[in-house]
Image (tube, rainbow, N blue to C red; front, side, top):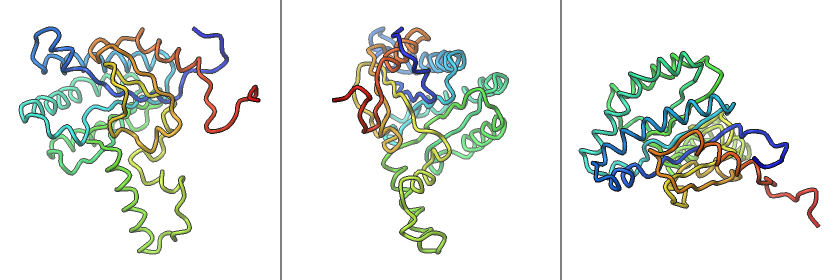
Length: 242
C-alpha cells in the first residue's frame, strides 16, 4: 500500500460491467453472468463494511437497459426481486441502510413496494449506506432536478437567484449523499455511461480489467490503494506546486 496519510474513501461508486462477457468466455448464457454478478455485489458489500467505507453506490440497471431483449430484462427484474427477498434482512442485520435512486414510474407495483419496504426497514442503519441505482440515468436525473427547480420558481418557493450548485444538488436523487470519492468500473471499459454525471465532477476514476463476476475484496482493495496514492486537488494547486 502506498505510504500516505490519506484515509479510505468515504464514498465508492461502481459501474458493474462485464456480466455478459464473463458468461460468453465460459460458453454460458448471459443469465449465468448476471447471477454471478449478484454474488459479486454481496462480496463488494461485505468488503465495504470491513474496509470502513460509508457509502457504496452500484449501477445495477440503467435507463438505457430497457432496450435489451425482453427475456433478459425479465431475468434482471427477477434477480432484483430475489435479491431483495433474500438479502435485505441480512443487510439490515449488518446495519446497512439501503437507498434506491432512479425513476420508479416504469417499474411494476410489486417492485416499487419492495424497494420502499427495503428503504423503510433499513432507514436507521449507520454502518454503510448501500445506494442502488436502478432504472437510473444521469442526464434524466439532471433534467428532473431542473424541472423541480423551475416548478419551485413558478410557485414562489424560491427565486431564480437562489439557484446555485448546492440548491441544484438538493433536487437530485442523491440529495443528502456525499459525492463519490472514487469510481470503479470493471471489464476494462473507460467511460461513465450516463452514471452520476453531476456527482462525479471531482471523483477519482479507476478502471480495472476484471469482469464484474470476478470482483473480489482483493480487487476492491487494489482500486482503493490506487486511489489512496493519488493527490486530489479539486481544481487547486498542491503545496509543492511551482
